[in-house]
Image (cartoon, rainbow over all chains, first blue to last red):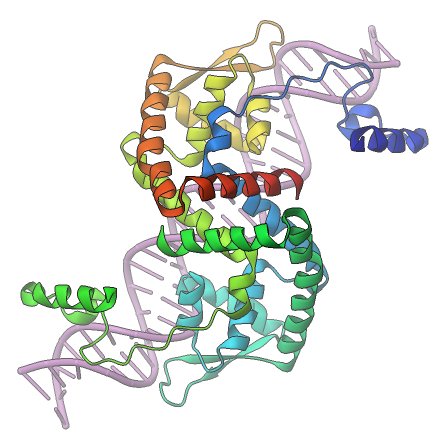
Length: 177
Length: 177
DNA sequence: GATAATTGTTATGCACTATATCGAATATCG
DNA sequence: CGATATTCGATATAGTGCATAACAATTATC
């Protein structure tokens, strides 16, 4: 049904036709190749895990697009908000980001005035990270978008109970596997 | 308990000491920094999803290391076995691999004599992909390793019912999200 | 038969990840 | 105290995954 609806809708606009193949649709009476058999692939957890992860990240980016935040950036902002007074190494380690790679990431956030590095007075080697006011504002807006658009959509697809069970199992794997 | 056990075990071997810090262990009476608060991060599905995926892939690589196969390579071999007579575009599309990127991947598999490209007689533009005998043998061994080491471990961690539920939800997300 | 589309391929760029190394600051230990 | 080792942020660099544009050869379309 979705297919036919989309097809007719496209046909209706066909006045400004970009030629059928240019739109990547099968020709009129074309025999569409039979779908490939996934076989054991559909039983391989890692396979579905990866594909699901890509979809979820894709949707996250879409939902949070107005704020131009990646999942990784969002996680940094969240962590900074919850853990004031921490330095780069601590934040990076918690997120599984290697310290060298965290530098450019912070450069990006700092250049957008979302957070700042402050030399620690206790240990003048380290930089204490803190959210700016703008960072807190952006984080608040991002949280709202994530909750109402992104996670809400997942809830709708799976149902709250299933979603919770899924989250729990994923956390278990991440923690103990 | 795990902590103290590990600590005492390490202390027992301390005869051949490579200096405590070199082993990245906290000093004798060191006050270990309190773990950071994940906060809303633990409720973000994408976060756990990504971390779980990394763990699972890591374990896959470990289990299948004797055969030197990545998850992506394994999935290609599986697909070729189940779908003989297909060309590069069809296999790549099914796996979500872009055709340009699939070329080098096939070069690798072909150079190890795991599969071959055969010019199609129907359409001389396309290459029909087929497993070699060695490819089939490696795939069979890989399947066994994956089942007995990798998936078995996941089953042990989650239980068969949970594992099935997890797989189902991930497939749903990959399909419908 | 002219034009467009498809297949495999190459080239290329961007993002993410990983390791080695550095100077500055601090900690450790004789 | 003073020498050595360690830690912190940073730089450089390399590998990998992923994406787009473009090309020659071949096939499909009109």
